[in-house]
Image (cartoon, rainbow, N blue to C red; front, side, top):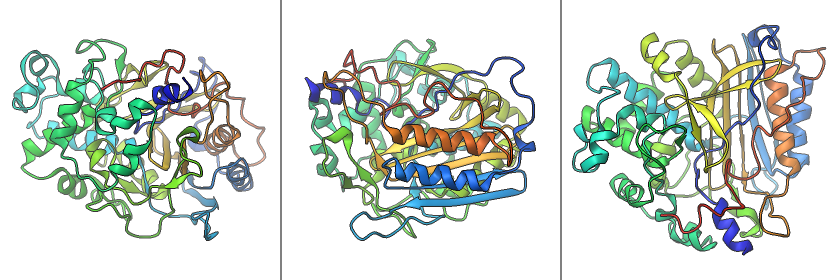
Length: 433
């Protein structure tokens, strides 16, 4: 039963980690996030605390107006003792969805794509019949399509509580069309346009194929030239091989104790993530990207307004988040509202949050995933001190100025234990796909 429950947590939102904080009540924000300068000593202390809590290594970049801080703490390689350093490249998982959404909205601005047109109009050979007529481009980008996820189809051993597929598929190239086929064959999560929506990586693989259809370019080329380069990102790329070029950490996966000791998955063919989660970046570049996006350098104001229109979306069938088009919003009590995304792939976790004006920002990555453990009954994940330490660093980065009091306590984890929203008690992801 314990193994089956682990399968239930697995990858219902494989590329995603949600910031799930309580909504701030009216009047709780007394100053603009950008008005607060950085408390560098607290940032250093709280990042070190993440390593002390058990995380192998993490890196963080924080910005307040013209002030910037970047740091790293812990190990990039647990065997050799090589330390992590600021600026290391890192797989950012579902943060890639923001890049893909920007690319699609650029084509909306050029009149080549209509947000409320059915996807079957563009990809009739892939999304056929009723789905092709009812699911729109907007529904793909805000996860209200009702299309299931392909993850358990791509990694079938996970449905049996085994991680064998992670190793068997390490160097497998899988075409995006095959990922879509697996997602369309999975049980639907609801009717098109139904709210709350349900987070599905298949939506963003379809968005990438849509982009290729209307531009005549492969998605990697388009994203590089029109999003990554246009944003001025210096260390961000869509990988062509299983290897990460440039300085990077090893990326360790524990899978809730099924992989013991945790195994390095930094070399991996990321075709399984496609335009839903394949991008590699750095924390500095992620801050630069979201600042460029939110200040109108990548898409115009009308397209940005569409992007920031949110709907409720569940992740793993549990708590809902306010999700726009490839971006979500969280409210930190007494601090402010922040936009961004988070991501999880084998061995790597990332979160990037930014104030609406792009002046207060945090991007953070870490190199040990699914470090939590199940309780004795196999029905829930035990709280990990690593989660609390990451939460603390994020809140201090976005909310605290030198000499100020500690921000109000956040009553729910910014990064819930394990993959967010997974309903362990129901085992709802077991044998899915």
